[in-house]
Image (tube, rainbow, N blue to C red):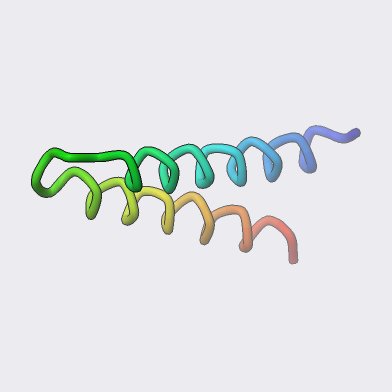
Amino acid sequence: MGRHQHDIDDLARMERICLDLAEESRVPGEAGALRALAANYGREAAKRTV
């Protein structure tokens, strides 16, 4: 696997972790921040797949 694919996989993994943590969050504001962070990881991964 090339470095490029490895980076995409890492970004997708971080996106999933953030979404999972957002679902478990009980701290006000934290879930929204984690979802926003997940969206950033997802956008970056999508940019690298084209």
